Length: 100
Image (cartoon, rainbow, N blue to C red):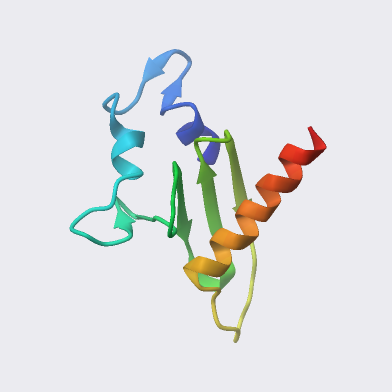
């Protein structure tokens, strides 16, 4: 799903949603850091993430062109804050960029 967002929702050359869909997701709705089922981290520049139960996340960074799917079972643990998720995923992106 993350890769689909990176490719502007195009499958086999076919547009699956309106052309501006991904841009719409990356824009806050109603003054909140939330848009079309995704959270937008503070200082977002083309970044958004979905948050599931038990520590599952889907992070999409359209500016740097990467997505991370985290599957977890954090039973009995508090979920990470949006700021913590953003810091971890941005650090991962920085490490990938540095590695070339």
